[in-house]
Image 1 (cartoon, rainbow over the protein chains, first blue to last red):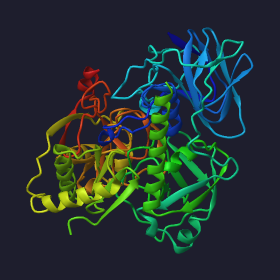
Image 2: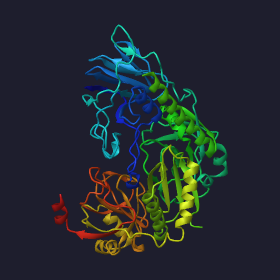
Image 3: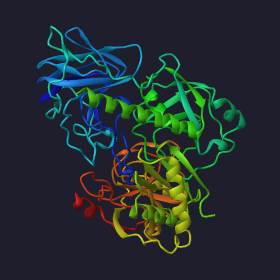
Image 4: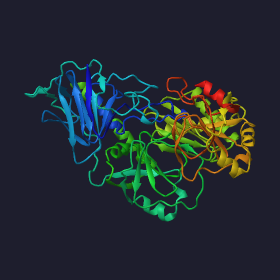
Length: 326
Length: 227
């Protein structure tokens, strides 16, 4: 059982929830940019949430299903079709053998996740299937997917779920998993906490940062989002001794440009960290495409934790809920 | 006070900062605390990331940040008296380096900047053992120090787009080895034939924080025989 990548679109790669345990050797956690969407696609399929999925950036991906498969798509950034039939997100789908799925532009979002019941059969490297392109680790030969890649999938755990079958043979579940994180398509608010070096910055920067609007630069990728807008100025030019950084950290380069570190962020860094994104909002950021504007809003440590716990609890409830459907 | 501050860098990661400095005594404490945590991991513990003067601890949703802070503060209080005595000496590792100018491409610049001959640079660089303070930047990249004062040079104004794998480089008080071909700003003075990062090996990194590294000069012929 397998699928074939006919077109990778803007960029597609195999990801799971990340590679843990090797950061002390400089290996980033990596994994899905939108961990909530990746987990959700898996949960809908009855998979463990850490199964390997295909992360599709924006649109233009084409995938051939060589066999019948149960699958699910979560996230955003595209609309998916088979023979002109739109495939709804966050529902269990049955795709007949030899179906060709294509994705077309949508007006919001950035990354969608295709999970297949049973899970993609990808050999884990250093404990994870996640593709870390810079070091050529994981996924399919450590690289982004290309035309012709054949990806086998494992035998599904799902047994004859009740689906509404369309004339085309495509099956769609009547239930829909909730969209846990909503991303304002016009001006998403990103909640941030003061960073460890916040007091290194000039009072003017301190005062304006939390109300400022920034544009996500076109020079953004899975490692980090460069922000265009007001420069952040430090009180003095002092060298920072390198220390650990991770996704969500907003560091400021010597030129004063803020960069939000994302999934493939390096493990250590030496730039002052003006703030950090509340972990729950990383999933919102993952759905922000280059060119759009975001607005920061300051929250405290406790609220950041509370927001994070709310997401963890919501995922748990969906898991329990779907477990009851079967 | 043993530590200067403790803060979250993520809702599931806490940093314990001993001091923002490059000092062997401080880095020993970082590694000692890492060993103390790893030898008796708490519920929900994922991993530790040692840096020059700080240790960052990652954990999962099975434990609360508040609980981890309390736990780490208690652990630090417990180990405070023994932390300086309890460190395990790092492994002593010898790394062959070819300092031929065809591989150490910045040797001419370093030589004129420091007013030292290439032979003097080699003998200075190989004269001391370096502590691996941390691994970071890219997988397997060791930050090592402390470089003899006479060898201190600034980083490049404009980073090189491609520094070859195995390049041994210097910047400020530090020396490092590029484990892969990447852009970089340090001055390259030689190259080692050893692989600093190999995902198929366990551990994947040739060096660990806490190791003691000395460099052995080898000829270009010897370097080529490794391949």
